[in-house]
Length: 388
Image 1 (cartoon, rainbow, N blue to C red):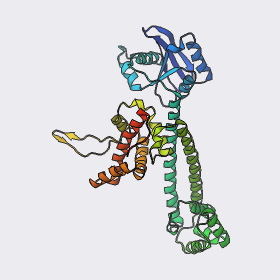
Image 2: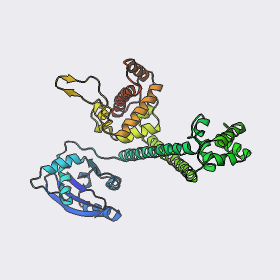
Image 3: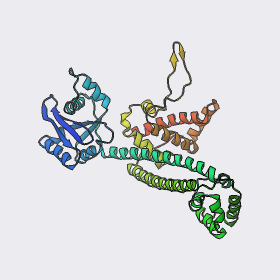
């Protein structure tokens, strides 16, 4: 076999190749992270037997993603290594030397020492996309939540009575449409009644009518809020940002749904798991064969119980460790909540844990752990959901 080690960086990569006997076939060389650089790599590998080539690189954020996609598209066998593996190999060197050129040989030798290697496939690229989209979605949700809290604080100062006037609160289309046009009680009170009624009726799809508009106008006339132009600007601009994030979330979730549909994953047969939670779960797990048993996947999600022991004392009840992937843990607990509502077996398990005196979220954590075991079994055996 021929082992090619690639040291990844932002602008330039280094590559070298050795044989199974340790003979240097290609001396370390630099190539750029662009079209010309990628084809320079291909030209260096061209004299070698492609079927015997195994290419390895470290997992280094996003810098190597384009190269991985390029090499898989050219039918090369590509393996992404954990930096911990290469670090232990590097420590075996007598001289403490770390350079890009040396690292190419370290990566190649690490490949050579592995008992079994798993090569990336086109499906893995879809999982990577799902992972990135899922994490981007969570960032958008977090930004939107922060903006909604800010908007509430602004309205509390300008029109404190408004959030109690609408039963569903401030964060609905009707209120946003109203505040974008008239962000203060004075502005609302000065809007013509016909226009105000029409505005509410259109934004609420007929739910609010003229009577609601009349009550709102009276409330605005009696409001104790401040008439502050700076707060008015902050209100309108914050609403615009929230609506922009809503649009971005819609398109992100649509793309996630498309990717999940193309993967035809068996976990989508679980009642209660939709495209969003399912997409985040698949994206964070990636290749299920990375986890040889369910408890390793459980630990990766941070749903495993933490250990508390001292002397002869061993705690019987501990909190979940909350290590590993926060996104996966979030998606699994959300999914478990929905599965409990849609499956009798999970509902019975939930009720049994609640009967032990556990809280709702503690019980959901146990249900999520049970769901992990089901998902691991389904993905490893490629069987559809059947738990009755």
